[in-house]
Image (cartoon, rainbow, N blue to C red; front, side, top):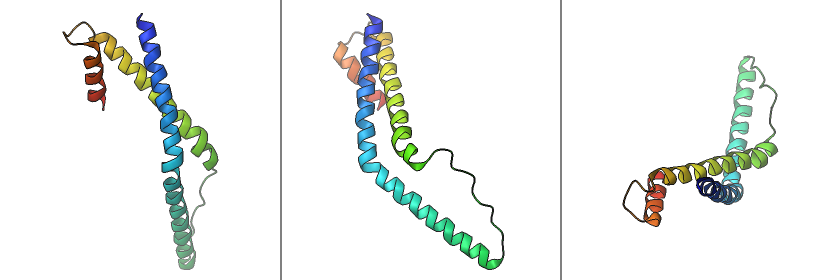
Length: 117
């Protein structure tokens, strides 16, 4: 019984994570790319100023994960894994508190979700 509730919570968190990934990919990623482009231009301008002054600037290290990997697989795995864990955590909290208070199950679930929010 308890494992089914926890699995349902994890599944609902997984679905919410997929929706969160779609939202972040469509709406947040363009702003992140604009910020990265701004920082790249700023770094290039600072490097040009340093070169004009005769100061040597150490180059950046190699990029471990490409921007494409970060924007697709990285954001998806992070959001989906976190949402799945939070869904399971809400389910466990519900199981622990269910029966300890004299309130309806739906009201308890709404209180837990509201407290988490």
